[in-house]
Length: 373
Image (tube, rainbow, N blue to C red; front, side, top):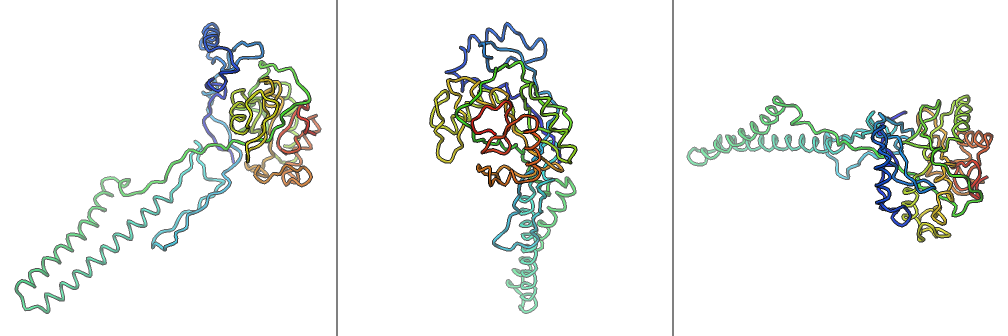
C-alpha cells in the first residue's frame, strides 16, 4: 500500500543545536545573503560543508508527495466494561487506515456519543410514557378536583418533553444533517522514526563531499518514507539491488540515508550521556548506542557521510518484517531469518555492501563500522 504524504525539506532546520560547532551565525547570514539562493528557487543550507562554506540546496517542500510503505502496525478497537445498547465500534483495518493525504480517521468517539444519544432518547421516551400511564390511571381512579387537574398537567408536561426530544432531532437534521452526526476524529499520521544502534568509532574514513548528496526519487522498485538522500556513489549500486529484488517479487523501501548533522546531534543528546565530539557515547539506560561524532567531525559517522543506507524488503506495500521484531544477535535475529529481508541482505552483499551485525537493515559501502560484515 502506498500512502501519499506531504514533504518538507530535511535541511531547512534550525541551527541552535549546533551553536558550539557551526560557524558564527553572522557569518552564515552573510554567506547566505551573498549566495542569494532564492534567485534560483533554492534554499541556503543550514549546515556548512567541510570547508566551512554554506551552499544552495533544492527546496523540496514543493514536492507533491512521498510514499509511506510501512503500514500502521495495529489499531486496538475499544472495549467497554459496561454494555451500552446500540454501541458497536468499527473495526479498522490497519493496512487501509490512512487516506491519500496521510490522515487517520477514528470514528470511535462519535460512535460512543451516538450510542449514548440514542439510549438517552429511548430512556426519556420510556420515562415519559410511564408518566403518562400513571397519570392516566390517576385520572380514571380519582374523583375529580385538584388531583385530576394535576394529573392532566403532568401528562401535558410529558408530552411536551417528548415533542422537544424528538422534534429537536428532526428539526436539526432537516436544517443540516451534520448537526446530529458525530464525525470521525481526524488525526495526522506521523511516520515513526527508527532509532538505531550505532558504533562509536569507524574503521574507514571516506572523503565527505556534500556535493555528492542526491535525493532518492523515481528509481524503479524503490520507495522512501521521506525526502531521503545518499551519496551519489551508491546510487547505481542501490538501483541494481532494487532490480534484483524486483526479479524475485520483492520491493525495496529506504528509510534512512544521508543524515543531516543537526539530526545526528539530536540523536546524541537524546541517547548518550556524553556530548557530541566525545570518544564514546556511553548510552543512557534504555537508549541505543549512537555514533558520537568523534572530534565533531561528520566523517566519523556512516550516516553523516552518506555512505550508509537503511533498507527493508517489502511486499504488497507492507514491510516484510517490522524493526521491533529484530534482535542484535546476527545468529538468531528473526529479521535475518525472514526470507524477504534475507534476500535483500544477500543482494546488498553481492553489490559490495556490508550489513551491521546488530541491525539487519543498516548497510554500508565502503565498510566504516567495525561490526559491519
